[in-house]
Image (tube, rainbow, N blue to C red):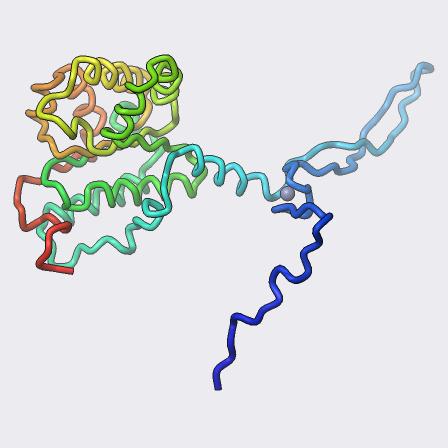
Length: 261
Ligand SMILES: [Zn+2]
């Protein structure tokens, strides 16, 4: 016998006049008023003990903060599905297993006295899972309440270029956000424009000097990155010294091509 799950009464008891809150306790203010013991001194010098109203964080506050981080990180639903659990390593060459292990270790070590060497950089062969693993890193960090901003190179640079006035604020933010994920650095054309190299150098250099971590993936090799902008690339290489993987060009590693499903 089958029981239909479609005949639930969800929605049936919603009142039209009552606003619905995500959190009924604080009505989405994220604060609740509690009464705490306090003291007041009267003009004659006597001290009375009283109960004072104190605003304290509601237990929903951390959850809301993480939701806001996720929203401002520009991360899509598709991106949220990329986890360590659904990354296939079995039957994959050692370099893919190494990339998985480094991404996983990066999450575990994140925030522990890494100093300048606090970044993660996966380079080389397209379709080998570089973005998937850095998305998995991002999702883990966001779940821990660490802000990560996602910057897909092609769409991101187009958007910046389309409004140079707004770009200043966005670049300022990309320099300072706790973690910046640059996906597909220098993709798109044979050679990045001067504007692009100057923009990314400004961001990498700021983050390098201020020991702010980056997650970077690119189809380019280290030599190619250096040929475009040695100053930016050498800083990136140093920042991600402990978590760099370069995958040599090998078309059989491209998961986007048919053959295996
Ligand atoms: Zn609440």
